[in-house]
Image (cartoon, rainbow, N blue to C red; front, side):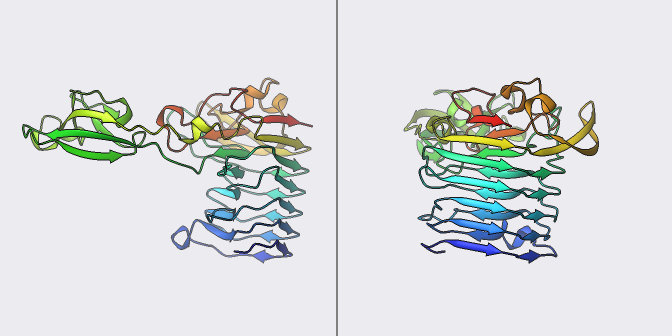
Length: 312
């Protein structure tokens, strides 16, 4: 960690960095510029570069050029949690062999006028995991994912037939109980006077029954409400970049047969909306995820909430 610049040149890594040792192979935190060039990241692992995570440190600009990410990564090649107001993130002349996403950006400081540039880059393979009928739901070149506050609420309740009122504060978009039909209900959607159980298997058991007396103190300062990735806050430029050319049958990824030009025309129907949060790794170039908001976990494309995105 430093208040000065970070410069990395001609670094070469190999082997494997287990997630049990940490989420990222390299964690970089400074208040100056981060510059990485001419390096080969061959180490397998979860994330490769993690920039700006530590509280109190936000880089001015991030530039990564002439680098090869050759090691398989279960998650992201590059994570930039935030930059300063007006910061520029540039990824140029780089190759990514096998990743979930090339870049994740979080805008944790909720600043404006951030520019993200990709130029002359190739990603040969991205996220392959599927969820239900969705193909590679987290796939894509660029992921916008928050790293900010969680929603919380305070509620009071009774247990079983005991009239004693108890109090709890929970993350109301993550914490859930189960109604009489055994269906999951998040705290934010519970109803005063209704009863819920702590597990679906225990519905009907008085010892796990919770009857809601009051719901209060909801905090509506989550990332979705802050609109972290609005066009006034983030602009994205893709210039001469190439992504995986996939063969899909039904909801199954059969093969990746090479690369193709990264554009709405080659991945979608020609519109920006057709390559954003499609929940399909065959067309999704840009993904957006709000970790702590169950109602807006992966929101559909909305020009007022997505960055200004251009392809050249």
